[in-house]
Image 1 (tube, rainbow, N blue to C red):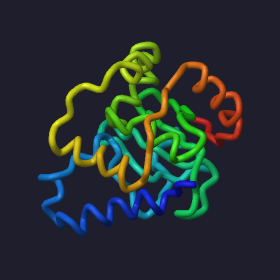
Image 2: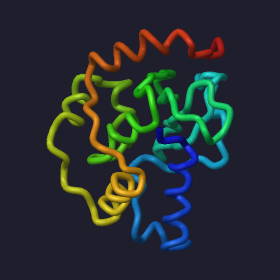
Image 3: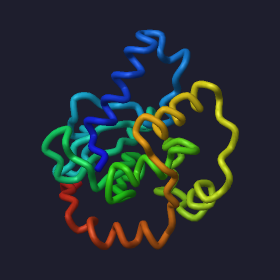
Length: 172
């Protein structure tokens, strides 16, 4: 079972390999690590989640439900502050990484705006990636042994039904 500490170990590997110049070789594809784990610091972020990554745009972040430490493995919640939306996007960290291991995770935020188009994007053949993006995606697949996972409306509905009621979102 893949845990958040393995994701952070991948970040350590990148830092050890390329140091402060890592950005020249690696693009995190919308999965910038948040270390240490923290609550997302947005009013709409569920209080019972801890963020482990952010996309780098508009405050969108990925969190683990009921996480206590780096041994957590899911479920994964995406918070889109601009829409005040929280979506359960994967049951495990492995499933979550598999969703984006060919195209990245930045586009996932579009689920809050246009779910059908986003599902079509993730179902299509991967668009060509930059060398830096490809380096990161290759590392995720090889170092973390992640295989591609389909993102479907049925799966998202199932996750929302099972885990959505557990999200403790403060009253706005």
